Length: 262
Length: 59
Image 1 (tube, helix red, strand yellow):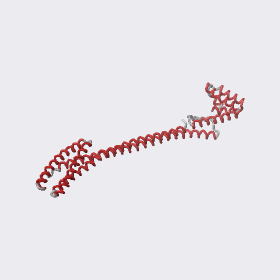
Image 2 (cartoon, rainbow over the protein chains, first blue to last red):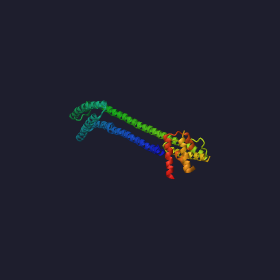
Image 3 (cartoon, each protein chain N blue to C red):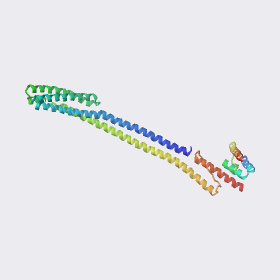
């Protein structure tokens, strides 16, 4: 093979391998990016929704306290009762939606337990509310009915939030590990590719230089008319081989000239 | 040994002179001394004959 063909082949081969490497890495990066997108659209969003529901539940409890504290005024009673029921409905809707979307069975179970506990709490709030209104706004009697009962659903929902946060942390760690793996793969492949191209280039150049060195030695002997026992053993189909054949012709011609002259 | 090959060099020498022998050596990449040490194989004879034909064309 001609030296020019070898060099063109080496260049083209390098371009093809680099392009292949680039395509592979783009694919890997896309995979990591998709993983992050899934994480953001799935677990991160669920964790955020859980935190919002947690806050809404606390607002609901606060609205109940506002009813007890300020419900003796008719306008305030209507206002805080409306806000309480609004928060109550919001919490139930959000918790049901979350229970329907989470993949983790333990989180789903906790949410279902929360919904049961919250329904029970709602019923007790209703009983306490009726006692409050009928008892002429006796907040102590009403509070006695539901005192401490918001604790179990609160604890359950804290566990839900913790569980979802743990899941997000785990998945982020997995994505980071995948990104690091892609980076390491890129470094290893690029390093291996660089070494391969360097090795092939070194072999090609060394082969050419070795044969050129032999050719130069022949040329030096011809320049000194030192043709006795001169052997030109430079083969090959490349430019150096062709040059060797030409030198062989020149050496034979000089030898013939000397033999004729002798 | 290459008697026929060597004879061809001498024939060319008679026909075209020293320069012809030199050109034949250049084309065949062998001197008459080397030709004398080679076998008169069909391939070697063809190589020399082709070179002689080329020289005659160029005359």
